[in-house]
Length: 430
Image (cartoon, rainbow, N blue to C red; front, side):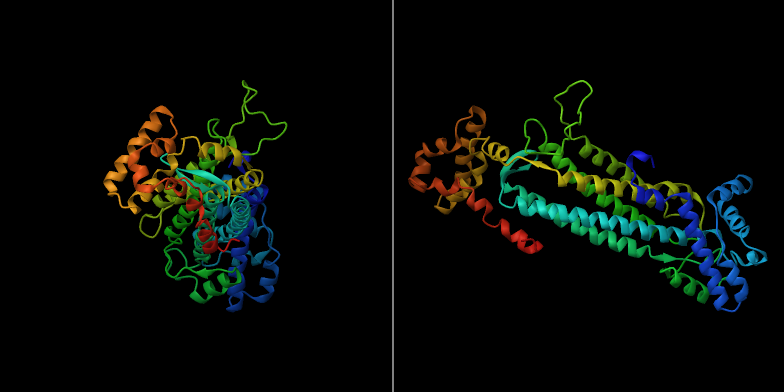
């Protein structure tokens, strides 16, 4: 992944050096298990514990062998003596690669969950702050009915919490390894060695393996990462729309020395939110590749390997960056309540049309008749810009049905906002 969209924690985690350290952990865990089984002498095991590996040396050997695991085993063996004969005992390459990948995924999952938790806290704070800030709700991009900005954000909070649960479940599903040999039958590695070695690594055996851990698990992970990214895209898209010049109800932060356009000095663009949207598309592509990797030939082919060197580190790295970017921008989000109220009133009261319709029906008018009456005046207001309430008040059918003050409640914000607190109670946000 290019440096522009990476953060140091994920860069270190998915580096070649880190990968080989995970491979080393797996190899040594298997050696320890063989030692406990009485196969590797304890004096040899004591020496094996001092084995190390250099990414540079692995690369040098791989240029000769054209096989990264063989290169790794040789490089590891060079750091010890004759006891190197015990390294990789009974294993196939995928035993090491897949189990180590699970270890890296679990560590990456921890970083991602931490970032999701930070995002949750920021969104919760915004939802509290703007709980009672009226704004217009939009459907199809068109003014619908009043809501509050906090309630909009409360929906983001609910979605973020769902994503935390989804991600936790997907990472937990990946807390598995396999040390069962070339086709998963334990022909050369007894099950007890596998169980003992994986337990020391904090993993559990996948119940049934081929040469690899089944790839539906990795696809589940990638699809979960894509879901989280899609949620971030939804939040970013909302901010992008609200930042439009004609709307300008909220906008991403803009630094004092920041410049928005090389040509137009006045520009304040939602470029960070656009960046989130673009990267979400990329992660969805990785998720699709993960789905394609499920159907390997027989007990395993290697078509998945090349893609996973990109998709899994890439998706984790990008999402980590996107979460941090979104959290930082929401911390500094600029919100304009006065503009929200101006926009709410922009349509001369049309947003109260349903309340008028219901008032007429409650007062005894036939629903279809009431609908046509309200729509007639609403369309006139749309076309001419005349005040919707004044048009209704001048209609004798309305005055006869509702009386002199019947429109007061229909044009009040209170009915629209009276139950906003219900969502907050359900979410446990006070």
